[in-house]
Length: 516
Image (cartoon, rainbow, N blue to C red; front, side):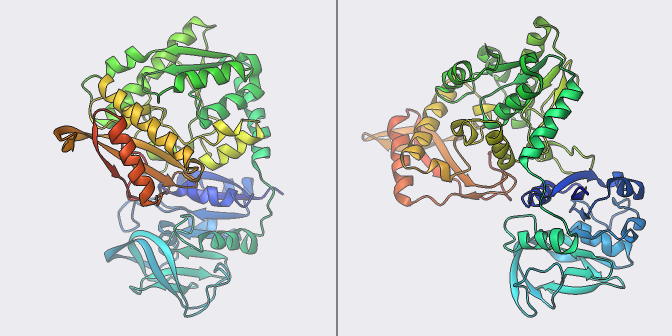
């Protein structure tokens, strides 16, 4: 029997981190919206376990999202996380209260007793740090459940009905900031659900190729190829599925990094067998962005213009009906809820929420339920070279969202030069591969400086570098002071138009990785 975990999405921004944690243990899982969960579905899918996600909503509000109580009597282990725990408590007759102060971020909890889901080091009377994000708490535990952990504020953070194999956690084990989070997930998967590690990217590859062949029926497909790992893996996957029916179109929107166009074009034309087409639309994009400062408007303009270019090409080439994109789940979850659950919008991505409502092309997004680390593994399975496979993420809208305020050719020139100096120095100092993503941001402010005994009034450049696994959470990279000094001197001395450099030490959350 297939090892399958159903993850029920109530709209949490970190639902897919649960999926990533499960998949990291080579256990297959699917994410479904809460309103899709039913007894009939469970009987059909035969999952080994069910995980209920968090949510931006509250069970104390009228019309809160829920599931039927009958699913809890089917003998399948269930784990509720944050909102999921509160929902379990409500369904079984417990009570929920608003707490006086939100418990958010790193929080210490006290272990009252051992539970089947507890890591081995969680012994009675010990304390451990977890990651919280909630404003509600269980004030009355339902009959049949016991409390095995509390916060320092005496709020209930861990409940269990060992007989029914139903568990609730107020904190988030799926977030890397919870030190013992993965051991908890493993306990649920292997000790409680009795899963086996049978799923891999190799299996995903073969299944996805079969799915693409069936759904596309060897029809012509246009793939938006930027040269990043996401679009490159998408292209290679589609090439395996439909071969010569694939058109890989690279669009120069004028917002690329210095020398990037030539580097990408040379590689795909000389080193691959893909049909590679390069289109220069830089004037078109920059014209549309003139006078635009709002980041959401920028993304939507860029998304719309990409589609205009693709539709124009499709019309001239055998009337192509499909557009393939390297959309990943972090893009999707920050733009909208693909499962239909009530998630909150963080930002529109040019290839998701930034797309026009009416399109002549049907979207093909074979990677839209994967994370960056999974895509890199898939890329290796497909034979993608390490130079591209391990590239730092680069946003589709390019440098437009790293120029805060209006985009102009003059400001683009400054940022391109700064970005190249920064990335080249990272590679020279052998830091590039230790960092998830690094880039410069040109701020919409100017400051006074002194250069050559003269007053200057020029731009501020913000420098960003983060470490991450999946892009959903991130920490700033702790550079040595000597590196920051060298970088600052290089940027100020070599880039005309910059007289001040600042380093961004914000984690995600509360910030995002990109500034816009």
